[in-house]
Amino acid sequence: MSTNSNRISRRRLLKAAMFTGATAGLAACGGGARPAAPAGEAPPPTEAPPAAEAPQEAPAAEAPARAERVLYLNMPSFYGDPGAGTDPGCSGGANTVFTNQLMFSALVYLNEKMEPTPDCAESWTPNEDSSVWTFKLRKDLKWSDGTPITAKDFEWTVKRNVSPDISCGGGILYMMDIIKGAADYAGKVTTDPDTIGVKALDDYTLQFELTGPAGFFPIMVSYPTYSPLPKDRIEQYGKDTQWTQPQYVLSNGPFKMTEWKRDEYMTLLPNEHWHGYTEQAPGLDKLTVRMLKNQATAIAAYETGELDVIEVPTGDLPRVKSDPVLSQQLITYAELFTQYMLIPVSAKPFDDVRVRQALAIAIDRDAIADVLAGTVTPAYQFLPPTMLGYDKDLNPEMAYNPDKARQLLADAGFPNGEGFPKFWINSNHTDDYQTMFEAISAMYKDVLGIEMELALMDPGARGAWREQEPRRLHLWRERWGMDFPDSHNSMNFMVTGRLKGDYSKIPEWGGYKSTDRVAPLVEEAARSADPARRHELYRQADRILTWEDPYLIPIYYYVANLMMKPRVKGVYVTGMGPTYRRVSVES
Image (cartoon, rainbow, N blue to C red; front, side):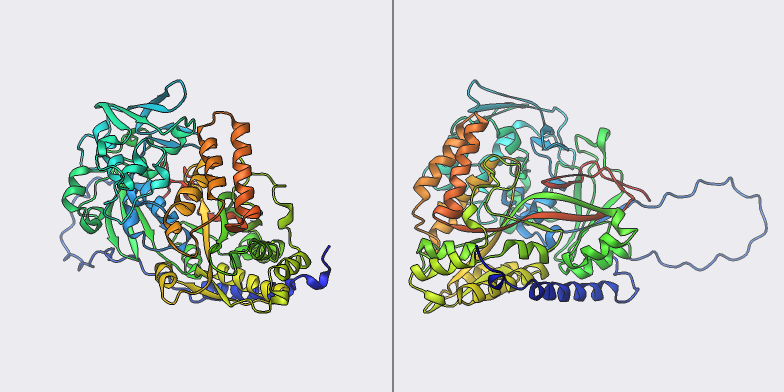
């Protein structure tokens, strides 16, 4: 048992957090001016009053004009412009999925209970072992210009989205490699798209042949990658993703995009050709998505009425909770999100399992949760709570243990950190990340005697920093938010997207010795129809990845805090976030 002298001073961490929150608060309270409205929304010109005329009979009174109903959102997670991510075939980040779900409808959507619910598909049926799924489509599907959509559009889209030549530089293969032949086509093992297991049996029947049984497939096809895309527009304007621009794009979801000023805002209007328009049309006239990356600016815009929904910055959460008005607008929920650090398992000294375990148990996750109060809970495994494979008692060895951490590092040849090379943590920059990594860096210094420097930067600069020669020894921050609520999503991403995917080609992260142990567990779990068996297989895989042979260091799970104006109606929130398909606003 460690003594109190081994624990990082919470006063030090809280001081840093208070400074961050105070800075944000000052920015939020500065000035009373409202942020400028998006460009292109100038008020109408003022006209001179008409000349006086002789009195005449007054016309019948007209009903007052209804005020325009506009919903103002901010791009989620402060990522700003979604770039190529407006193409559902390239949809990977929180901001891109957010945009896609406004503009496109997939085969199903997830309801308030995160259950698959008919969207473009009216119904779906599996074969005997759930390796073949047949979807019956609605007959009223149309693009936003009124052109009909058929099963052929879905077939073409799936083949296009797994193509190695997709215009955005690579699709989301881990979401589609479950389809027979998709991985081979994406990897250029085969060149015939007709070898991919998707086929339009007629105009309104779509069939998928999978690599094996998959009872979770109807949940999986809620992801934007399974939305239909306009073949003619993409073939004509697909170069450099031009087809996603307002003047070219066609969509089939609740909204259609009419304006996009890069890094500033998007304007979307209700799509009158959406198949759900008659029954569940959005109750608004216009939706504006702003792209405010600064958290203090975003909450200031919310408090002055320029935004209707925001993610609450950590530093402002205590103030919001104590405010009699703002606290009534607060929505708190557990997100299916895990924050973690990837370890360069092939780079010395991280190739030694004892070093990786020492890094994991030198982190006081409770202290970090205290500093980020109300926004996170400690994580000791990759899978989030409620998912198959999650076990709150999975890794008891990962509890904060300075004495054990020092012993592990000494056993690896670095007593008191002597001779351990300096390394970095690479992450995009937010106030929360700054606070958290300053805390972890202090823990590594105080507990292990090693130095971790912060390399926090704009998201677009991270890849170039990683590839810069000479390569710098570093941990890589990632957060994983589930694309659909089944553990196959998380574990298949880790195997195909990291252990066998792009990261396997990077020398520092390639060569993970336990890939051959983890991959078969994940593959068997995907084929199993027994929830208890799937739970145990995912549990075993998670144990290997996070403790027995660590490839990643879990830090915390997210607790999301939204504020939403009372005038916003019809939005429901799940562990996947808010859904706006039935949103309405009062004038």
